[in-house]
Image 1: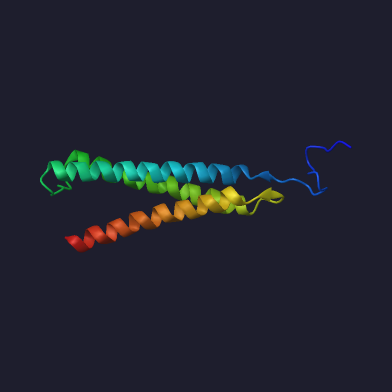
Image 2: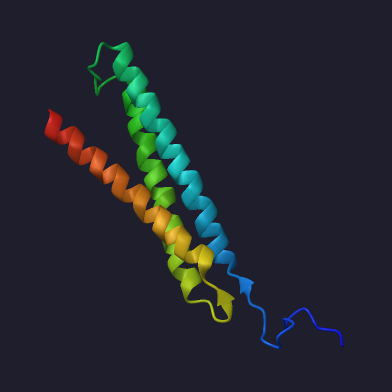
Length: 120
């Protein structure tokens, strides 16, 4: 007895992963890595300036704009993850992971902003 590509050995249909979910997961990982690198660059700039980061330097402005851009990319990951949840007859694993990772990146940046504001 030979099985087709759409049915498993138990006779149940096998579902493919959601393309939107996979994109959401990959973009969320990329955005998280980008935020991590940009925060590390900001820390290095602050250490080189003896612990004080001047917000008006071109380097600080570029890092800030980079973090904003990474958050916009992260927002795209969350939206794609939500769209992936609504795809019929697709696995939802990567969509859920994309939403979770994207949300954690967003909340992590928000927490850094709150902590930075409290330390001033």
